[in-house]
Image (cartoon, rainbow over all chains, first blue to last red; front, side, top):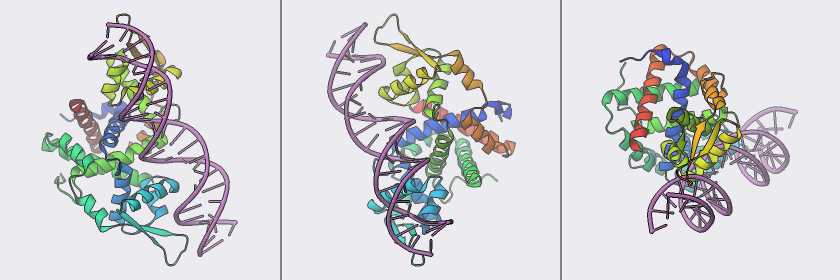
Length: 145
Length: 145
DNA sequence: TATTGTTATACTCTATAACTATA
DNA sequence: TATAGTTATAGAGTATAACAATA
């Protein structure tokens, strides 16, 4: 059952294809006002607490102008707030609002509902595989930053 | 070691975050002339042989106008050719060229090289997990189409 | 009429370059 | 000078709507 990593040759290709296609699907399923990028950045602020915009950009792996846009959209959706740093006039911290945190813990989000419906018939073993894979990927991205 | 499926974040959220972030990274690492979408469609033509554009769009989960664009870019890069269907003047088949097939089997592609470098220090167990996860995801996308 | 694919148009996500304000 | 963030601009990827050609 445990397939050999002899398929190793093609492993990067296979991971790339799966990720390309699933992320496309997730974007299609996302609500217009709540894109995957917004959710990802919002999760990051919740996990890290108030965080300067530049650090948030670095953590998410995007450039600062991109994060400026993402934060703008989160702020206008009342999911995050910006607070000027009292000690450094150049810097503003980004933080999730109560509504932003509530949204993340709510399960009815369209994208997650879609993914959940995809996953619902998988055996527990496959669910654990996906969970572990997500963990491995996050670890890789973290260490490569 | 087998983590329970209930952690702080729900499984769909965790999969979504991992996929969002990795696909962003892969897009950043891709060559301008050879995007993830192009590679994905090209893989599909190689796997399926000559295939009408509309069917290719359906398999890849994009709309026909999108596939028209992707195929145009593959054709102008000499990675694919279009052949009019002799029995149906409305339809054209898409097929990988020898160069397209060679490209897919070449290992030096920038995106895959990047992914391979990310993966190279993972233990075999994690590689097998990712491999199996890719398989599960492709299966889900296939069955949901 | 129905189907296959294209053209026209627009929106999101992202980047780089140039800029402003502060340190 | 250096740093934090924004504005301006551009390109990729995708969608929907309207269209043409063919069935």
